[in-house]
Length: 616
Image (cartoon, rainbow, N blue to C red):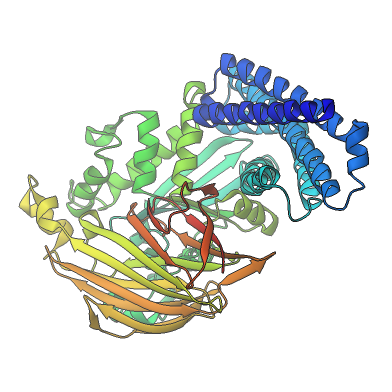
């Protein structure tokens, strides 16, 4: 009887410790890199208390004589062993949390110590925190090992705790992995092993291309030991002209749809080199044209767009572009740049001169920012990378691999499960991506054999008149011409997918192109959209063997990747399970959704992953 009472008290301690750790997690997640010293002190105390409770619980479950005896019983034994293992997992989690708190404390210290650029202080912080990251990795390995030892048929309270471990472990692994990848990237990328020169592509995402946007300007920057030592920006058109003059008019055959709807008889070139949604592929193509134009050797490629400039200015504050007497900020930089790109300000001046000045000034300011702006800059960069407005390609395979793990490479994912990416390309040379609104609806019907029958409906609205209200009509014409939007749309899906139909506004249209690219199959179709009109484009296809089965639980996983440069758009997903199946759980981006809904409404401001688990 005494053992039973103690067991109940231990169980309560475990639940209390779990609640404390979740409170710590919520506080640190909420404040991020801006976490205060007082919050860290409070979090440490809670984590220490939880660690003590969990260590005590583990000791009781391992050492109580009656429980040791119970371990020999056929059914009860595995339950006792699982309880001890879960208490041990909790203890490891508390230790991991304490290491995380130490890491954030060290970041605060690195931020407060000395001067230097953001790059310099980042490398200093990563150097100083390696021991904490190594300790976290050891705790994660221990958690994985304990979890593997848990058997089947656990009592509901134990099964619930085990399931929570399954849901939370990937997030922890990703968090620690990003620290490790950041450590691997920072020194090499920032030139601590020798100066690094990068080709910077300025992508105009008001004229969307698969890799992010039309390339109007490009730059060369040099980083050495965390500092920007050299930068220069130029017009992509001048590089193209130089190539054509040097080569005597060399012609490179464009991809079919790009030639058919935009380039016609013109050669493929740097400006529209980003036809692949996979950034490493697009970066290599850009390098091909850059080298054709006589550009000096570089160590990698960085892509940024107007949204990047907006995000950086949101942190850096308004800037005066001195040669033009114009103040740009996060709300006006895109339009002010487009105005001066479409209309020459001075006779004989390069039409991209203002864009070159803005890009140069903002990039220089970001890379040399002072101490007070480090944290907001890091947080802004994280959002911009997640939103696919910044991507980096490195010629060094090892550095590229670390960029991939960090999430900075802009690659088309090669992970398991079902996959979808919608890729738009503006092929009528207008800035109508400022005015075109879009949303996606995905219907997934799973059959008894584990195949997925998917229907992707894309809704487009050309809201030119609404956008034009209050603007100079001549400016509207300069940017939008007649207002006719031509979009070549591809959907990338798993290679084994079988296309069933393509419809435009409900009418059968058929595909224009089916191709293998970036490890996926793409279905392509041109969509015409006159000013102030709306249309839908639907792709229906089957994905064989989209469901995996483990221990009687069926799992369907769908990754929806966001296109680089694209604005966030509403995303709706509906699931239809096989007849008689019961849903066990639904998670969005690793977080379980209450009530396990089969209708999900989200936003495509970053990649989204949905996991549905069910039993037949």
